[in-house]
Length: 236
Image (cartoon, rainbow, N blue to C red; front, top):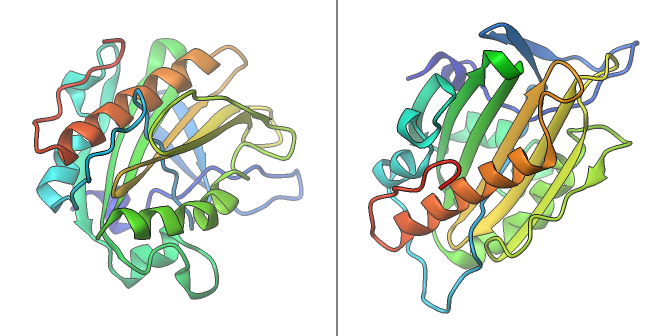
């Protein structure tokens, strides 16, 4: 099991004041990502969904849907794709609200992370896999209420277009030093996806990058639910 998952990573971006909301910082390459212990970020992208019924994913399928090194040209893998059962500890992290609302029928949790030193950027892909589409749909609002706070109170909404059945994203800053960050959440069939991107300086990340990564993850989740081998790559 990866250190990030074993230690309760990866939680969601959270903005901090100078007085300081507690944050956990993890060094990835030359840049540092700001995390708050206790939430998760989902993003899924694609060209919209069709009328076919999506299937519940196995742990192996969740792992395959998560982007790996071959899917992220120009980026370096920090944490290889990994999926684990959604146990009580991870429900507290992914759904840090009363009763862990949004995680009741989640079966698996998956994660992969990347860094790119030339752009001082980090990228985090997370997935919660549910038993059916209805439970994923029910969880969406409760989890976006938590995850939308990540890029700070002055963050702007980012339109992801026709990705999945539902999608939201926000772009802003993740701490008092003004480090840029973005979070996106997408519902694709029986899954909720989160994409989280951080930088150290203005210009390290942009809206187009967030959209591209959301699209990548969305397509891979859709491919997995159709029983295909996920093959989408960034920029394809």
